[in-house]
Amino acid sequence: MEPGLEARRLQRALSVARRQDVGAPRDAAARAVLLRPRPADDPRRLARPHAHLQRRRVGQRHGCGDGRTLRRRPRRAARRTPPGAAAHPTPRVLRGGGEGELTARGLRKRVKRSLRRIATQARALARAPALWVEPGHFYSPLPGAREIADLERNLAGARHPLPGIELDAAAMLERLRQLAPLHGDFAFAGGPGARYRPDNSFFAPVDAFVYYGLLRQLRPAEVIEVGSGHTSALALDVNERFLASGTRFCFVEPYPNRLRKLLGGERIELIERRVQDVDPALFERLGAGDILFVDSSHVSKLASDVNRLVLEVFPRLRPGVWVHVHDVGYPFEYPLEWAREHRGWNEAYLLRAFLCQNPSFAVRLWVPYLSAHSPDELARALPEPLRAGLGASSLWLERV
Image (cartoon, rainbow, N blue to C red):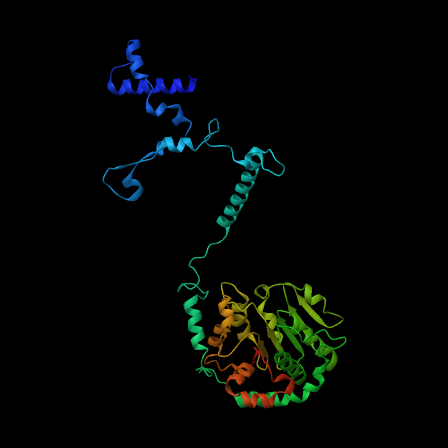
């Protein structure tokens, strides 16, 4: 008899004796009674580790409570195993007998490696900041399905009132008519030696033409750009070709690698910091006819660049300064596709609140507004190559 089996029987006998308060067996006969083989010690049962599941309460398996039992047929199950074969043969993947098969040691290594990877991911998730509430919750600034559906209904109408904001469509159209004759020289864009390339998806051709035209019309002494890119390339080209390099540029750009490739011998000032880290007094040096060109993160949140600009920089500007804000669609809303991407941009809403009943700022040019309210007049005011596929999103303001 195996030593382990004998030890288990002795332990069981001692337990029975203690429960019956009879102490240890006093003679061989009593010991034989206590140590007689029991059905649970059947070697065939020990060879089948799951034999204890042969008797189950029907109520435990099927939800009944009548105390009946479910019996299996162990003999029939035993006959399925060929004589001399193990009841639970080692899986082929663990034998390591053939080429390419995984040994037990290799499997342990793979499992440990997977567990380490899972533990690393779990630690990263534990350190990551969790959302207070899920998107779409009334405490969350991120839109959910309900808000997106509401936006779709709101954008269905062609016109939307903007109470508290004065919009002079006639003056805007007249401004475009004044700029239209300059379109002939705009052909330089994308040509030899030009930095600006019109075939980009960030600055629409209409917006680029308006910026080009206003630079030539206003002839600013200084331009401060917050956020650089295609607009910077266009402004530098216009300054070099049409303004005799007389405009001074200041770029506030914390990631200036792309901008550095555009720079030549122009008079520029590069501030490699976030606008939140720049003294607002910098913008007070702008005078009448100068331009503050803003292409921000479009997100108003705790200590964001949008909050800094709208709440602290704009009120400091002197009268006559023109302000450009990018990606502001009519009616101070964002495209439905962007909402479905869960961008969560909200700069336009803060701008609308800033302009409401604010006599210190006037809306000078807003092509998305004209496209919705005066599409025919807009088409006649724009040069023919710019009439199709507008895609404009620039808002031009003036401090008055």
